[in-house]
Image (cartoon, rainbow, N blue to C red; front, side, top):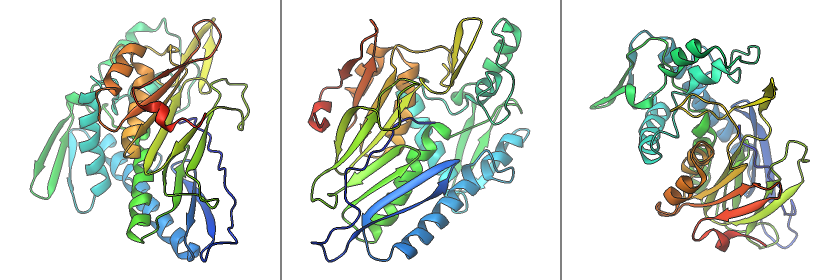
Length: 338
């Protein structure tokens, strides 16, 4: 789950515009979505957005037993699918493979067995005993996105897995991808001014009702922080934003802290030096996935990677001495509203 808390610095209606700004909201992917746009037929827009996100969930939700991804996870060896009937699964496989390689495996959609082992998955369990190293090694052996065999045959794609217990979960990129899908729908309608947010992952274009660039607040990375306790504000125009952190979803056992973002290479669940990673990118799926990978990676390695990727910027929040400090990518400050 992501922890960017959106604070819309806008008025919901503009007296000086022919078409007022309106907001629609709903539920998807176990969270909520909010869309603010300059568009008149909001009832029809909401109907189309809900229909789009429903189709998305029918393919990619691990909470729906009949979804495409659930059928794959329940299979013995894998599955063959149509690109036409399962476009979202196909797109997620292609993009996830790219980002997996880009991040050196720090972003890994096959992390599910470890997430379940630590008690952060669909099947809630008691807090883990890390001394159970045998089971940990068994779960780690089920992780590795490069272990899946992905083939394309005309309009069909095939995914095979070497062990039946291996699974795929796109939760670390799905909300960002959902934002991209909704924005594509809005762009097709010719809407030029909007802000789309799903579970904290966002994309903005144009201006708000005040005629200014959209501004989004980034929550203070502290479990005690309020929902409107912002540590920074970002300007966003024709750009996507996602934030990851381990400061809310965690538990302690025997003075050891276990967090929900797990290193897929070591199998370890431990707090990272980066408390919060905010990523800006041209598409929200990329921002979403790289934000997760940044929490897994060493701080310097993550920033070096981001500085090499065109169109991607980052703000890391750390607190080595108990005081918040910021680490920015080369061009991030151009988006900072401070």
